Image (cartoon, rainbow, N blue to C red; front, side):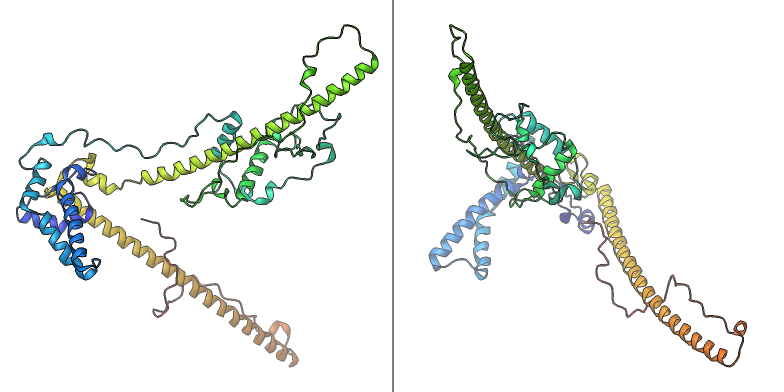
Length: 440
């Protein structure tokens, strides 16, 4: 039989041992080649089942219902599980007649991995790699994910360059161009490079992603599902801007020295062409930045998908599997040592369940005790206030009778809060008493 834990209980194995029945356990994950039912019988059963369903529907002009299942399945079973089919199953798996050569190395080959580390079809530029490195190497706090952190401060006029001769000559990098340039509009605000530190830039970018409906899962830690998708990429094109006069680059030198007016006119043309060239560069850099940002988002999404697949594919191997089937090999399930291991394993699991139930019971009792103590303590406070009120009234009466103050009775003291009280067995169990239990 296969290695499913429900198939070899200690009671079954002891019964088999007492009746001279030897039970062999298949190696884990090998039943597709070693179990006769999977190799031969079920395939024939599938064909017979489809054939019986077709015959039933042709005869009765109706679908197979629960009431018809037993009859249809019984006919298919009798057709599939015949003596030749059962013998063929033993022969196909090399059990009888014994033939170990029917199991080839290819049949025992490990399955191909179903997921790889997510990657993009083209190498990512260095800015994108830098963003990815920052995202992968940092865990984000609540402050990072706060949407308020991505609201940029107001930009002063000095920081908002214009398309004019006063345009700063400092080179502008793509990371400082947040949006494409609209034709005929003012250039977008370029924040000073000294305003944001690298860590604050990451916080601004993280909080901006966290504030979006479709991108918040990229920076948070929710379990990613098929419902989490990113927007399709947008293939941007630079906006249409006036073309510079490129002929000025190839203009041949004049045969004579130009006049002052000619030099001034040429300087004006060169300045205009330089401004237009600068605008062209800014527009293309803006498109490049948008493409790089989309690459970064896609790469983050690939990483999250890979994490989800890796978690699903590499589930924790229980100690029970390692204990009962060490090395992944077959076992004689009726071996006395194996039966003892199974019995010990069952006893350990029962003890663990019992301990867990006792823990739940203790935590429930502790919560009930705490609630009862608070109730008693509250009542003690009420009683103390009443005693103080009665004491004050008594003192007023005694003083009116002429009793000296030093002869007055002592003021009642408040009792110490009890650490334990008697619980009533009729008190109901508190809800959520097992909320601190660990998942098995």
